[in-house]
Image 1 (tube, rainbow, N blue to C red):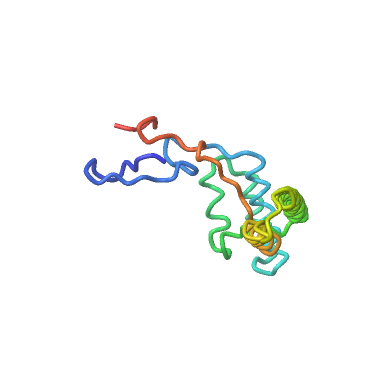
Image 2: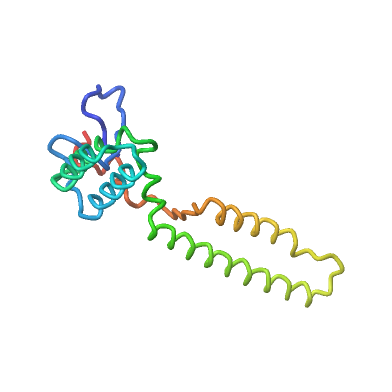
Length: 166
């Protein structure tokens, strides 16, 4: 996040550093171009874009040098076209792998808690309490396929370390 130079120093707004403009523009990568191209191909397959319009936008995607040139190409698509990325075979396979990994973890924890319950000799099956929450999380992951672990926000620079901070 960087300060927006168009405001006064009293009322500083912060803008996202992903698509800076001006002399601080960020160059785009081949991976980002391919993601936008996948979005556009999906929109063409859904009938949201005509063949001519899709080809025109694909040409612009592969000609783009900076990130801020990619955003307008998908701005008029629902959710910025990001749903098309989630429906690719690679993304669906990654979701299935994630759900299997999550299920394995839940089963391992269930076995460990059940073993502790057996060793404790308690009459009440107390492992049911944490297992209910673990299974609820697993069902949410299986149904929606959106479990994203974000341990920290290390991708951003602190405002006082920004190149254009006053």
